[in-house]
Length: 258
Image 1 (cartoon, rainbow, N blue to C red):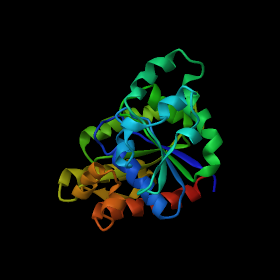
Image 2: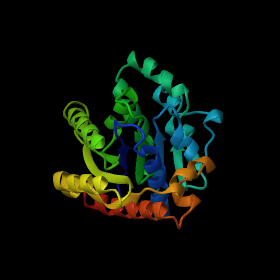
Image 3: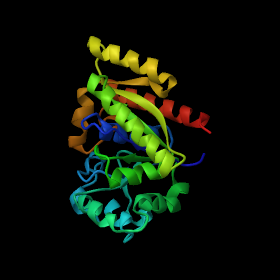
């Protein structure tokens, strides 16, 4: 199987991008896939949520983007998660400014990932919530975008912005980029509005909406404070089981992609 590089992106904050990235990575590792998580958010939440101390990194994604380190040198192992991490910390916020003056600034990550693609089945890129140079690096590197979203009305508005951004990147910078699918997260079936928005998503996006739905689950929220994915922290929880099901569904969907 060739390596698939996916961005987990949504311009709206607080929709569970990092939770999805970390739990999908652990879920994919559980079903036998080799995974690299790239943390492109200066907050470093995916790094910490994978059990890696962002304050003590010998090298990070910042060094990779500025070409003072390779991915192979900078990657760390999430022992409990069973996947590798290209970690991030506050330094990354400065990379935005430094990248502006550089040649091919949108393609830095893409070039850096090429030498290690044979090591992985999946590379998952956790993008920051803004459309920044960092997000653009992620989108220019990826084959596709996974969009986690809550079933709320504001989420639909944000989604149309994101789809337009993806179309622009596809047209101008990365012809491979496509929306792989929408993942409904933090879902509570008791709330009528969420059910209505879910139905609207299905009607509008059809089979682009993943069958798996991630329920609102307190164990998923607790897990990062222990430096673990929810999938590892409490494998029996509904949220963990949903992410493992999602990992399986993604593997099947990717096998059908051209």
